[in-house]
Image (cartoon, rainbow, N blue to C red; front, side, top):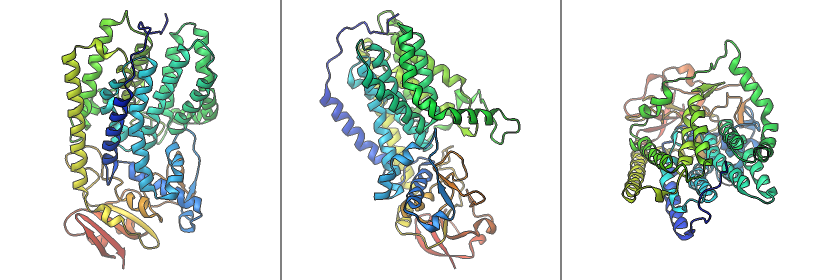
Length: 483
């Protein structure tokens, strides 16, 4: 069965409306990532960026602890934004990368809409999906890779629908799929599953399979050994990071953990997805089958993917956003009753308002951090201690886990707790070298390597910090230096 839509003529483009929407969205996204955004791992990735820049410059103090790598299957944004880091710092580069990710979501949705001949303005329905778990958890490589996978799927669909030569399209597909793989293997796996599903249900099947193979050959060749190593580790007995399917978490993790971030952060995309799916089911005989096949494949992948695999955590909850975006191109929105479309637009606005409110509340909660990271730490190793745990007020997500790494990201020097003990990051410890990671100030031995600390928490400082003197204070934040 052909994947061509029933309409022979694409809907007219209203470019000025899309440009206005993207400008407004870009401004909103810039405010969200400014200052200290609620994005758990973002400051750690920012510290990775700044430390990588220091290694490139040949900083002797940093080089004594860390070394640089070019990993396959993870971390492309850290290398991609290295020139920005060298010109500014890791903090700015990480915020810019997060902003770029937020912009890529509606742009990749727009690419799919154009290929499937949907009205361009419908990208507004997908805006809440940009604030997905990869954003809230600050999984920067994952967050970056998801829209790259959607762009790749759009190019593959374009190649399937083209009757002439598609050499240029396939070069673009190969490059985009490689960028997806270099950003994060999970998104690349989803891309492969989506392309395979489309190839198996397209006619002529041989041509579709050949195009898919050509588009995936380069990244598969590059990462094949890495995939084998990860799967071997996942299946090895006694693995320190065992595979955990987490059946229940496929259904309740998002609902349980999205609280102050906003009920609509989950409810809005679910509602909109259900409406589009229902509209497609009613009109399935008149609509293209391609997006439906893709939606089912990505949905099935979400259900089959474990919660943890080979050391990677929360894999499955990163995938629904892909199926969510595809759901929004299942049908032309004109098939949905006008009152329902208006209701969905109001839900989108309400969801984004809730997202803005949470950003504002969080920035108020951690106010003072920017003041203290504006000045560099003294020579030596600097660290971060939270006296109130790693969870923000009323949230189940660990937003306080890496906040102190904004100091390293902004000023450089020898920092800690930015995943340098992992074998998949661009910046890693030298073999045999390590520093304490998460610290709560309960042990003087834990604090021994540090000459300066950022401490978060109201009230008196614990006795374990008696060897430090306070040199700065802003809100609940303390800057301490060793006596």
